[in-house]
Amino acid sequence: ALVGMSGYDNRSIFELSGGEQQRVALARSLAPKPSLILLDEPLGSLDRRLRERLVEELRAILSRVETTAIYVTHDQQEAFAISDRLALMNAGRVVQIGTAETLYKRPNNRFVADFFGLSNILPILAISPLVEGSSAVVETALGRFILAPPQAPTAWLVIRPEAARLAASAGGMNHIRGRVVSWTFRGSHHRLVTHHAA
Image (cartoon, rainbow, N blue to C red):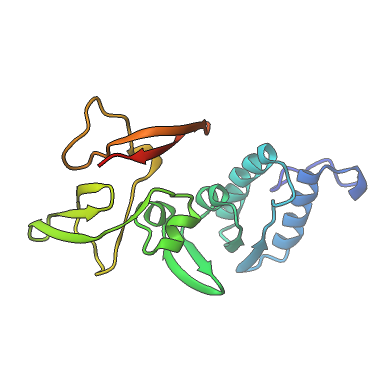
């Protein structure tokens, strides 16, 4: 009943869909009431629509039974949807731990930013504090930007897709001048490739 499989008791495993088979596997894992459960890519073989639905249900089930779960996945959206905290690994080492929002908004290195598909990554060439501890002006190959002072001596500026928008005029800080070379539709946004104009 917990995994929504009431009435399926007498069915053969071969009569169940992929999603129903995953529910049976989860029920078998939870039956002994473990204090910790490891789920290694549990939804990886399912199609995107079914996976999205089961992620929501899985989070609710784990909360209901109050079982701690380590959930292994390469799918960022899945990790965001199911986790309370993320531990992102690279080559067998944990590179950042935190909430999904923290890792996305404040990646602590280039690998983390790349992992989340944040492709607008610029090395910071120079930092000039505006007001001590408040904001700084950072120099990049594409211009000057005002932001919170970087926490490390070597830092990168990441411009997330949802933070960028076309401006009526370009010039000054937090603006990039360029000519659009190509663009592609990406669902929630368009990806623009530009040629930087000094």
